[in-house]
Structures are given as C-alpha cells and as structure tokens.
Amino acid sequence: MSTIDTLDERILSELQHNGRLTMKSLAERVGLSSPAMIERVRRLEERGVLVGYRAVVDPAAIGRPMTALIAVDLERRHHDIFLNRLRAEPAVEACYRVTGEYSYLVKVHVTSTEELEVLVDELGDAGAKCSTSIVLSTPIDGAPVVPPEGSVSQRTRLTRRRRRSATMRADDIKPEPASRKRMRRQSQPEEPLEA
Image 1 (cartoon, one colour):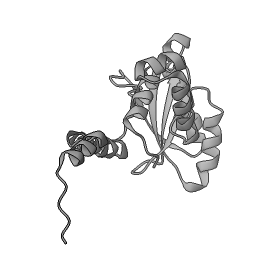
Image 2: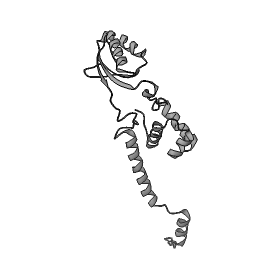
Image 3: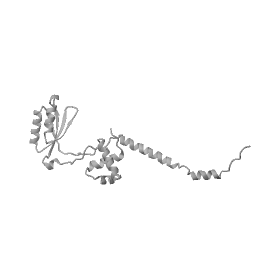
Image 4: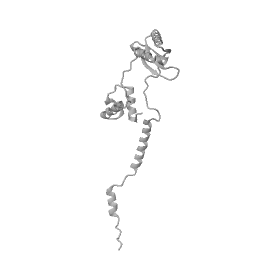
C-alpha cells in the first residue's frame, strides 16, 4: 500500500471533484507552489495512486437513458466467450468479477427494455444465466475515494501532531545564548588557588 499523507489526500480530493484543474489552481487550493504540486502529482501517478483523468458522460444525453445491472452465473468453460462478447458490446460500462451466487456483475446503459432483452438473450447464448435489475435512480455516484479510517495517512497525521507538540515543548526551553554564558563566567569571582 502506498503511503498517502494529508497533503496527498487534499490533492486527490480536489482532482476527484474536478480533474480539469490546472496545476496552478490546484497548487493554490492546496497551498503549494506550482513546481511542488507538479512533483506531488507526478509521484502520485508513478505510484499508481492516480491512474487516469477522464470525462464523465451522461448516458441519457447520448441516447442510453436506461441503466441496468446484470448478475451473471456461468460455468468456468464459458468465461472467455462471455467476456469477449461483453468487450464487443458498446452498452457495457463495467463488468465486475464477484463472489457469492453469481460470477459477474455487469453494468449496462441501453436505449430501451427491448435492447436490454436482446442483450440478455445474447449473453444467454454465450452460456450465461442472468438476473437483471433496472436502475431506478442513482442516489450516490462517483463519490470520491478516500483512505480508510486508521490508514497510513491518518497515522502520519497523528505522528506529525506528536512531533509538532514535542517540538513546541522543546522550543519552550530555549538554550542560553553564548554571549550570556560568557558574561556570567566573567562576573563570577575566580576561586583562589590552593597552595
């Protein structure tokens, strides 16, 4: 797992809300210089934390107003045929390999129930047993992905707070300047030498 600090979290949050931000705007929002921001984003990309930037298209606006989830059960020998069929289907947005009663969960955007029926029949021809649910609404979609509670970034945050507290306590005990030490030594009477 990649180490993500609070600054990285803020960068990821901003980019997930608006992936079109310029590096300058992103730097201003997060409180970094542009070169520092460019370097941070580059490192997030290299570590595989940021994996892409893409436009989000409304399926209804391009003629695919109906979204459906298709739970698919099929025998192992049919997996390749099924997946090849899905890859060729423009209605498919995502296909998840899942545990439980079904093998896959497929998200599709279709023009009508008739198109959905044809698609389900074609998947059946590829060996799939399907259970289909039409999506009525999407109350949560595209929510930002954040590190889990107790994650590395949260431990990092706590460690930094502890360090800051320790530094602040250490700053309260200021070392005596060298000039004062000299003055104090000069003002002290010399001890007589013993004979």
